[in-house]
Length: 61
Image 1 (cartoon, helix red, strand yellow):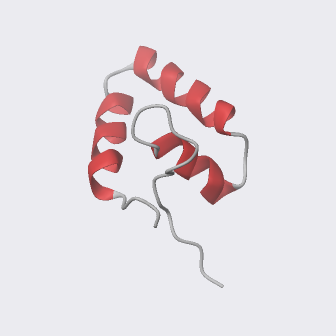
Image 2 (cartoon, one colour; image 1 turned 90 degrees about the vertical axis):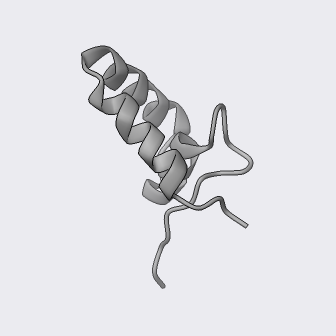
């Protein structure tokens, strides 16, 4: 069975990107959110990756 990456409808704070990544990798969503916040402070690349994923990754049905 193939896994697909979707933005989460249930586990979301902004656009569901971190919740979707956590579900895809089967880890706690808080860990993904902490990594995302740290990446925002390290440089602006994390911000742009989040925006691109929010626009490109489909919302789960």
